[in-house]
Image (tube, rainbow, N blue to C red):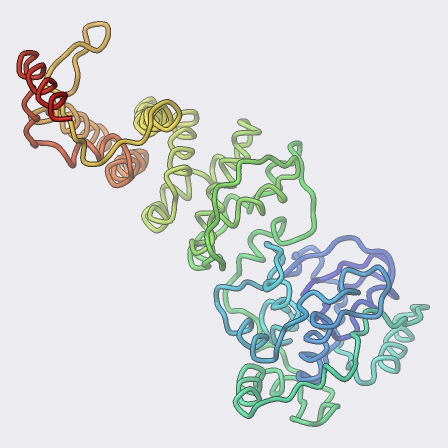
Length: 468
């Protein structure tokens, strides 16, 4: 669903997919902007319009559009997008909690689900509607609406789905049952009866559909919109610094986590959306924290981003610490080192950053310049031995350097509660990951293999040579 803000007439059009909304929007006039899952407060005094449709007919229209395409030349959906789609698959998509439906991520299952979620789903915002038209009598209803508002508009027919013999899918009884269960609220609140093309009533009460608490769509309007926000307006790309954080912590981002995105987009909203797949399966709050860091990297003077960054760490870090990858924990540590509220916080942040980045340097050197070695090592060095500038090698069997480092870090971390939690989480990740810290821990206390002196070595070589 997209809420379209129309300039003239000054209305909000609540567009539910496959209800003739493209035609209505095209007829109404110039577009100011569009928002997903919410209507910003500054537009809520405008009259709002929605169109509803018999649930099964709407579902099949979306199904056919993705399976067979539509009749609008050069449109994205003119060609079939999911040719092998079945009714059962479509219902699976609807019931899969790991497939999203908002516009924060664009892929085929998300897009399809966006088109088929029930009209009464809170994301569709029907509770904002002042006027509700029916698709079945849309031309008549739209004409009456325009006459009431003094609008001269003609309704075109756009994006009609293709029909044909193939779309006559047979519904198995279990699929019929699933559909009626999933769309029960549509039939209840819209007044349609199964098998009837028109509702029994024209008066609607959508107030029970209104969320009791504010949603992330309300709290982060820029992200769930088609706005483009650049550096000069960086603060506008984030939620208000005083926003309640619990809704962000409670919402889990659907999808499967992907690898880190290392690109850069000048449009901050587009950049945030490129980061989102890294946080699939995590809370929206973890993603939001990453976005505050992006803003601070680009605009260190953005006070609202800084205040939001510290609020999340101070109030919610325990909630999201397990959701953050080491990559983002290091980014948090770097941000603390740069923007710490005291010299102690900055020092602790720098300690966490140094721990992780020296391990990163070491592991990068091994990957780039050294071949893979068997594990555990087949050879072990004797303790001691010079490295550089008076430094000696780590004594694997009895060395306590690592333990001492970690113990001192624990004491330092205790002096700065917020930054200290980040430091200790970084240390725990380094101990668990495939790092130098973990490898030395695994062989700590294991006696070094005895070295063979030169005379014995020469004798063994002669024996082997003679045998060969």
